[in-house]
Length: 466
Figure (spheres, rainbow, N blue to C red):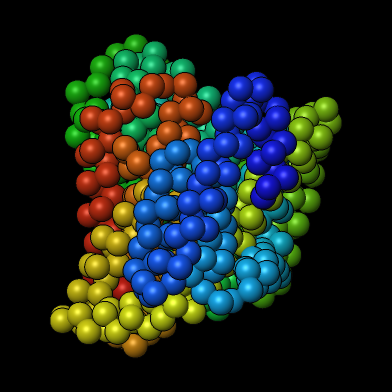
């Protein structure tokens, strides 16, 4: 962490800023070291100091989330306990060493290949030929395309980057407001968090022991419930859209676009079938998807730019490294919370809530909407998944059902302004200022929240096909 910080500082700062940074960090370390005798007797109050105030201050100071977790954990262990700080390294290594996490770089790579080979464009083209003449048709296409593409890539940034450039120009020509475009893009990102092979679902499986195949099976219907809610908002907003200048696609054109899209549409079903039927594990199936995508790009779509392969591999390595580092530092932080007795206190509080499972699920939704906006999805799961999933079993909530509620609530927080980083990723990809989408996204977020409540209230939506 120190080496990365020094290299970053050397690459971006001048001598004055470099000296100021060293002085500021040295002063902060000195102050904390002097406060160590005062901090040790405070007990669990230190959890609030290090893991709420200090982590919050670092996040708002734009310190990367993995560094914020790691620094807070090392500071807590070093200054307030007698535990050797080298233990944190062991916990980080353990968090990054789950075999299932091999799927992370493979699915990131797969998502980037989807965009490069034109498979995403083929799916969008088919949906547009079906619905392009309907009021709000391209908005429906955006919802449907994100559903299909999310089932392939597992990376929300890759999903949005594959869909937005294809649809947004035509949607703008039809009179859609820029703010509504980015709002719907962000909302569909939240809607598709449970669609396999979601990296969040893979992370849940790795830290809680829940079956990956069961999570993949249970994640499809909840996303459809939220998609119906988003489509209802689209219908209301675009019920008066003028489509007199739009030409309806002929049956011949629809059939041709369907034939072109068949290999792309089949991929998510191939991935899901391979996992559910036991042909391959979640780790192995990603390689099946990559081979399928390469063959389709070379022989079906004839779009495989070899010059882009190296940048894609570099991007895959960088994104995968960032994700695994976050998981590692979050695991270290979760271990520190567990050792402090916080997990036992949290378990006692959650199990003592009146009202049983319904109140427990309501508290979970509210908590993870907040956590998703502050911590992002994967760190929040690594921190609180091992603590809350056993409690869910105690109060009678099925672990797959609980996983869907957690992921959907977290997705809302992740993509909801003003704190959700997913919203700003959608703005960056669509090149639209965040202020323009703040108003339009409220209705979509309300629809997502209502859909999440429905999924929580009806367990069959999540576990009916297990």
